[in-house]
Length: 91
Image (cartoon, rainbow, N blue to C red):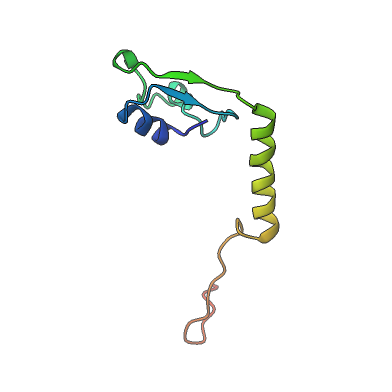
């Protein structure tokens, strides 16, 4: 499911359709209703057909495995301080 910002771009590009697999209650564009951001309020001028849940299980598994692999590689960990002039940046 696209985030609010991506959904806004999809609307600006005036695409006729949007197909996505997995839904996201945290980052998805439908959060706009809860957060009252207003990206798709008064959406009468845009005839965007939205189809969600296509290959949902496969999409969820793909996304889950992607982030599991990132965590294994340590890519999601906090950045380490680099020593500069003999200082390590730690307090």
